[in-house]
Length: 261
Image (tube, rainbow, N blue to C red; front, side, top):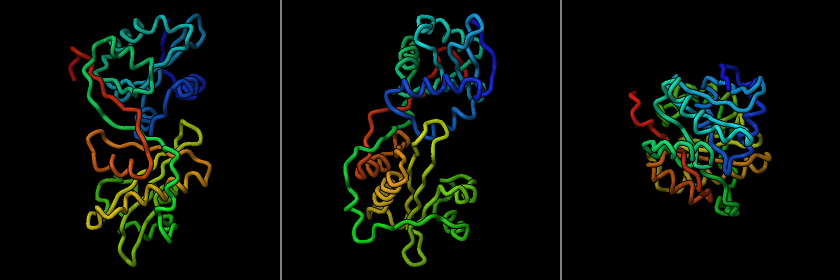
């Protein structure tokens, strides 16, 4: 078997096979790492049989082999880790192949994040008499958004507004919270939803209502809502669960034992 660096378009068909084989999808946090990775195609007798991807030369974010060739998966993964001196592996528990291979290697496990899906419970009545609590953010809201959210959204607030990813909930002139919708570039028909509540108005159900509103908005657009949060962020986990999101999937960051970095 041979491997070589390639662009994402060359392995697009393989990538879609990988996604279809997952027991549950991943959110845009994980997706951003994948998209920023260097891809490598795996070839056998000049035919493509799989691929892998490495982020920042040290973090494996993807590893996939077509079923007829998975008997070589253990040997090939070891080769990839050694040749690229990979220190860590991002693996979703929804990815049975890579999770099993990583467990075979007795990697040290760190819990990174929860992935959530909609439970299907109809909680729209909980939005109360004014269901349209959010509106698309405008550039005029930028200063308020940055003041309230700090560095939570990074330095891309203006771009996010222009892309239609941010929504705002105002009470008079006060920004109570921000809704976030990031459409997936890899999993068709899905989007990751999230929220940020003004610190002065927390513990009043605002975050829950934002998630409920975003779920309803996604369904109206024919989009499947997903979400995620850091594994140790209990407040976000409780908010998502109270809004009818459920988790059965974890993102793990597994360290290659014996590798420095």
